[in-house]
Length: 208
Image (tube, rainbow, N blue to C red; front, side):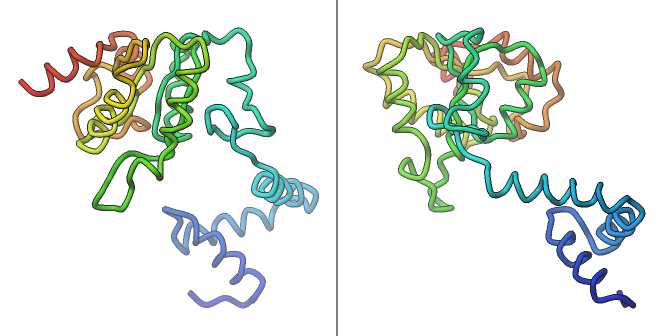
């Protein structure tokens, strides 16, 4: 792709660094920005810069936050007896979009994958154990993607908490095995949460 402007070439190059954005798509974005008022472009780039420099992670659940505690953890209307354990920020967004869950969350920051060098030490499991031990939580809802790695993570956490008085459930198999939680449609995800199973039932069904 040949450019008559180094400024445009540099902008296209930066946009094309984003996942799923090729050079042609990046060029369309840059040309669209050129049509916008300068003040609008300043607002666009300013928002991105502020987000990257000022974003924090909630000290309670590890979700993205504008302050030390995220809006979900700070909301007193949420059911504080439930914690939904998820892999990433995208899963929180997916579950919140169903409008069927009103508890809190805990982001692990990934799932166990020894082949990729991801062990318990790389995940936010210790802080989850601390939350369960030091708060009024009664139920942990394991909402991890139904993959071998996801199931392994569920089993590991359940084992670590076997002596703790907390109910551990997992979302029902409305989501196909091997699927990613964030890509499930909202109705399927909502049903999976509503029809969640005790962890013992889940293990029994999965290994028949």
